[in-house]
Structure formats: C-alpha cells, structure tokens
Length: 64
Image 1: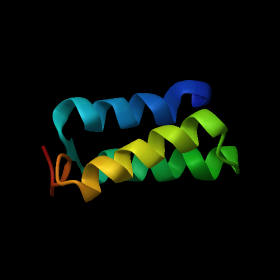
Image 2: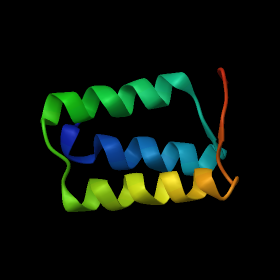
Image 3: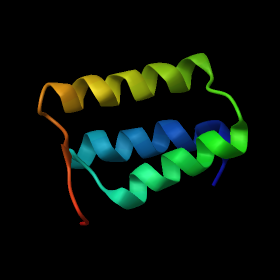
C-alpha cells in the first residue's frame, strides 16, 4: 500500500462503509508505525474519523 495515501484511503473506507473494522483499525495502526509520524493531512483525516465515531455516525464492528 502506498504509505503516502494509505491512512487517508483507510479512513475514507471507514467513512464510506460507516463502520470501522478491526482490519481497518489495524491497517491504520500499521501505517502509523511504519511512517513514525503523522502528517497534517493524515491527522485531519484521523480527527474526522474520531469525530464521526464520537457522533455515532461510524460504528466499531467485529468484522464485515
């Protein structure tokens, strides 16, 4: 996966499907670990994901 866009693509997937699976969450964590930092754009994407989860529009599910 292209690390430059991986986190944004994974967040986009969660926003589109309205759910966050353990697979997507683990992939986000893996990309963050590989990069070793969070870019401003990725931070905004993650912030949006967390906001949507806080508002109940995105649900954490066991699997798809």
